[in-house]
Length: 292
Image (cartoon, rainbow, N blue to C red; front, side, top):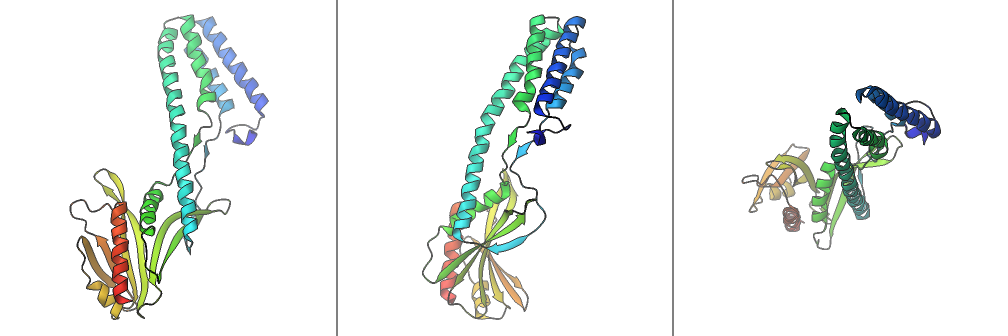
């Protein structure tokens, strides 16, 4: 337990003794001097002895960015882990709010009474102060990567679209490493490829970004057709494609061509829902069927 304390290299027993002596001395001084304030430095000393490090599952990134092909099962495992983390975080919110309300409802009136000279008010006020380490120190913080979680939901919707035989959808995860060398997933892409394809076609990559909308940050998925150069039949077919509700933007250079297919952004289209991502996947499958 010692390694979880913030300050001093002392055992739990020694810390409890220091805190007990400090809290007792604070109460005696307050009673002897009829002053609430005189005991507060000793209360702070007790808090110092009992101060705990915060507990969190948030990894410390090392800055590594490694894209790696993974199976559908790995994506499902990460989605399940995020789901459980969100449930755990919600489970910790209720008790934390109740503790704050309890302390506030008792401390405010008892503090007013204590500063007015009431012994009972002083006892309740000190009780709140002495209880703070047990109620609030060492709080567990459950981390959920906000942006990655929003993106993942859209990718899962796209992955659930039924694909014709002869099409391969490969998830690619971008991993970082934590201080212990464990993989930390940070981003996701999908690569859709027909097994038989034109010589200049690499595949269709589905990416997602986070845009700031009128009501906060929202996910936006789009498709990028990757080709070898810009003069082949696949690049020509995709850069001339038309689809209601989507915009097509050709780019790239003579070595690597790109065609971005994205939802129109007029009228609030900066946000892609699960249905939008499914429509995009269906659109790109049909477009690939025409060139494969």
